[in-house]
Image 1 (tube, rainbow, N blue to C red):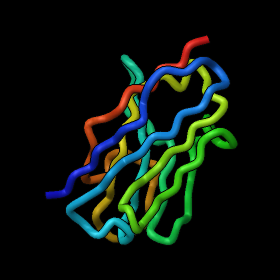
Image 2 (spheres, rainbow, N blue to C red):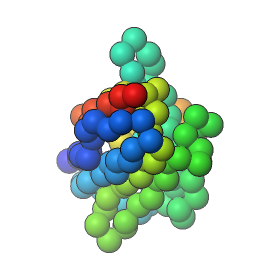
Image 3 (tube, one colour):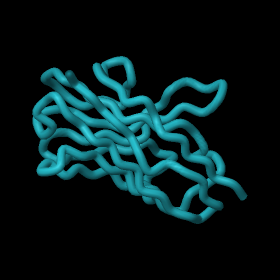
Image 4 (cartoon, rainbow, N blue to C red):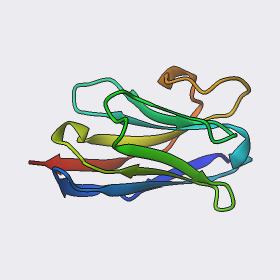
Length: 124
């Protein structure tokens, strides 16, 4: 019943911008942790940014100052605004939800549900 669907991926040159969206359904969107994760070929899935039900956010050091995570509770949609893109941002980006109480850690292992991903490619 819980579904997460990412969109908005694509290709950009260095310095460009993209906004990713994640449409959520099947649960009370505003009550749980949401996050963006990414995985490059041959690499593990790493946390990019997370947001809790109150809107408190946390970012990976590699994206601080460039990416912004936000959520629209009325639309049950999570966003990731990505500015000043770099080639090292190239990865498959996934949204995830942690449908349990507690904190919203930067740890993929505690997130219960995942979207199928959207590809982001940044060229020089």
